[in-house]
Image 1 (cartoon, one colour):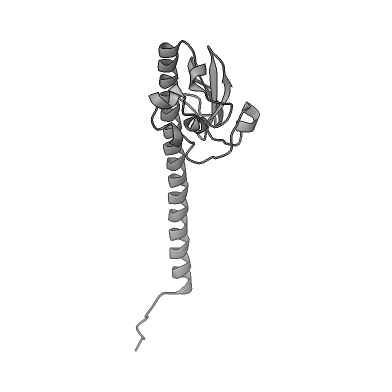
Image 2: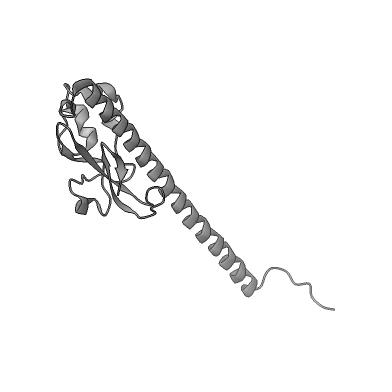
Length: 154
């Protein structure tokens, strides 16, 4: 009389482990890509809001100098009590990159990721550097991007 087989063979167990590992790898890669999209969408939204607010500041005061910001992280402007930018953008103190903390005052420092930083702030011009992990619009190139009075650009 043949014996009834119970349990699984080693080969069957290894095949199941391999399939589960493959599925988990695909899920992790997909999740990582979605997280980059979410962070980039937040960065773009933050920069569009900041750009619009800087435009209002210039219209109301005649220039950007009344932001009283310095060439460092944008959120540092919130510590300036006399800043008109703080009055126009109430969440200024929390306006930070969702992943990166160091400032980037020059484009080459921004190449590996950085917090939103003023790199130029003059009466009639400004520039904020920020990092995108997946790119902007049709340009799917990660790296340093700029917010200027003209808008967002690489």
